[in-house]
Amino acid sequence: MRKKLIYIVCLIGFIGFAQENPVSIEIDTTTIKIGEQIQFKIGVNETNNVVFQKLALDSLGKIEVVESLPIDTLKNRLEKKYLLTSFDSGQYVLPKQLVLINNKQFYTDSLLVNVATVKVDTLKQKMFPIKSIKKEPKTFDDYKHLLWWIIPILVLLAVVLYVIFRKKEKKVVPKVYVAPIKEALQRLKELDEKQLVQQNKIKIYYSELTDIVRTYIEKDIKIPALESTTNELIETIRDFNESSNLGISKETIQQLKEVLQSADLVKFAKSKPIIEEIKNDRTIVEEILNNTQNAVHLNDAVEVSDVINEDVFVEQEPQKKKNNFVKYILIFIAVFVVGIGVAGYFGYSYVKDKFIGNTTSEMLEKQWYTSTYGYPSVSIETPEILQVQAVEIPENLKTIIEDVTTYNYGSLISNFYVEVTTTSFVNELENFDFDKAIEISLQQMAQKVGVNFTNLHQEIRVNNGIEGRIVNADYELMNKTTQQLNSNKFTLLLFADTKNVRQIIITQLASDEKAEEVKERILNSVSLNP
Image (tube, rainbow, N blue to C red):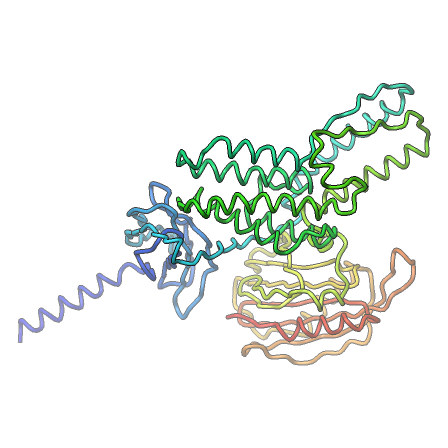
């Protein structure tokens, strides 16, 4: 009996010791092939004052982070997930990961990952396209630094134009250009003469082959192809082809995508295609060049065959006579070219979405995005991904408010506006007064836009067990273009739990029937996450 008691005590002591470390790791597999992904998860048996440090990778830097997923909150537990991969075979050790809990350091166990090579039989096994990398949406802040370059360039351009127009007589030397298609075909011929394939220099061969077609695209279509990834280049060509009506066929674009992906496999995944595949890629590249040339220059005054046969063509001399009318025409052309260049680089769809804007009819027809915003998060479906806005908590409120996050699309003076705001409080809320909160929100909106709200209507809403209110109101706003008052609608969706307040604001033009459909679709998609 005594031995039994000692055994039980030791067992309890062992369990207690094993549970002292609240940090653990989980992984779906420790053995993958090159390019496959691992789901690596760090679990913490705490929910308060937990800080996950930056993921420590192997010492050789062979394991890469594909995506860092948001922290999941479970019952009395937090989980942080990562998607990992590697493109080099071997055995790599993920070191111990550091997690801070109440400012105390805790470490996970280390992990050994085996990465095996992929044996590819290109005669029997079907080749699949490379998956595209998910990109983070770009915001205006990502391009703010360019303003410091654009302003000096515009000033310099103004000085140059002044100097040019000031001089009455200036000899202009005609510039001689080699036709891009002629240069590309000549480089293909020179590549064949190098006999790189016979020397088993496959990687160098594919690098030069793809450089030829990328250089041609950049010079003739004016698309930045040399510094773009395969997926970025194909995306840009499709957008530019559609917006500018270039006439490049879908088959030609698909052929280009397949050749570039084959080259990527050779350069980065150490793939070794057979001779027949290499010859086929070489033939396809020449077809791509000729088909693209025919499509892009279909309506040119000069025949395509003549351009290919000519070694050079000469730029015409500008007229010597200059007057104010010519100046204005040149300035207009410069502005137009800059606009076309911006649209060509970023894509027409991107420029329209970010600067011109979409009508509500276009919003209904385009692809919608379901995303989560803030913490605790709000899941919502919108026609555009909402952009995060910087919010500073006043010093006198930092003892009350713990965190505020705001995401929006459009502006309060535009025809359609969406905003999602989450507010977390330091202490729990007792007897939350919805009427007072709604009154404060309306006052803030009235001060921002300078309007008065009328026809207020309020209803109770419950979302995932959390009580809330939906408020509708009308207001009039001056249209700066027409200088007339427009009738607008204001909608506020407000929810509150023990420590958090979440609100969705939508403003719209009252006369726009499609805007009402957009609003209802957004409101019906709202889901509060615990």
